[in-house]
Length: 105
Image (cartoon, rainbow, N blue to C red):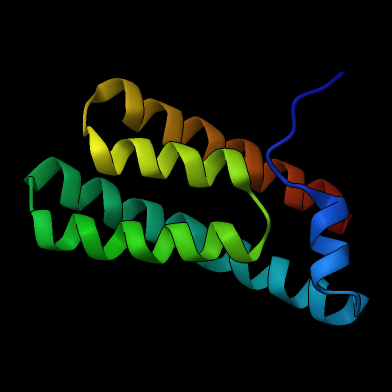
């Protein structure tokens, strides 16, 4: 069984209108990389207020698109900011973007 970040069944259950679902995912793709870059910048500068703000944004959007593994990784990063938890966030974000792109194709 293949591990996925995007829970399509849950997303379709929560948002049954296909046009709205597609718009949500397209919007997510437009903003996700910028939000992740903002978090990376805050993490590198160790700006705790910006880290907290960006984590809140990313956790909220991950929840909207039904990406529980990314939500968990962000939560772990919030609890313990280190290179491993950051790497998990980055890799899951990339995977989620790929899954969303494939779903929209």
